[in-house]
Length: 304
Image (cartoon, rainbow, N blue to C red; front, side, top):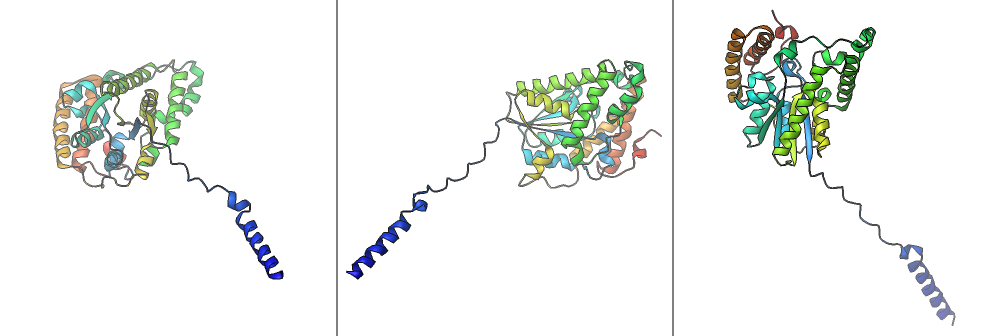
């Protein structure tokens, strides 16, 4: 009898353990999968013009890294429309030739989105309103007049983008709307939005523009439905990027031809247009001599 009682007690104890609170707990649900990537994505690369020849931490090949990591369906470049259609990319800063080559060599469509007049570039800034804010404007908008000597991470980071946006606002406030730069940015934004519309809103749009134009182009692409990513994050998250190396020979050939045409244009021009082409020829001369690589001093890019 005692044996039966002990056996019964052991059975009840086993049942209590097996059927206790833990036995009725539901198995843990698997973690939620990450949200799907947005269908429309954009990346805007801020370039630094002739300072690529000075700043060793922002080589031209970094543009190729972003291109290879992002794999765009459409590339926008900071070149005026008519010169782009005519194949005269010396009209733009030299990195746009390299950016256009990256796209065309891989069968990706390219669209120009820059707009300016040579006379506008040489025009004095709009008058300060009121006149006694000179020191405030100098401090708040100084970034717009400073040399574009930035590393890749600086030129394409959130901090500089925020500073540029605030500096543009300061210039507009204190200079009666700052009409000439404001008109140019409006055209750049219009051309960017029109380009993606004409191409049926491709899934991945990559833009190469001057670092001071980056916030404006990023804003308009976001405004027409794109989810913006920073170039720094795109490279950091990429499994493979384009190996840094020398600029292709065909691009260097383009630079040599552009230098010849820029010098010819400078000889024929006068006034603001002549100054524009002399600057282009001076920079292209260094580009050809250095094979679009680094590094020279800033004084090597200045007028003699």
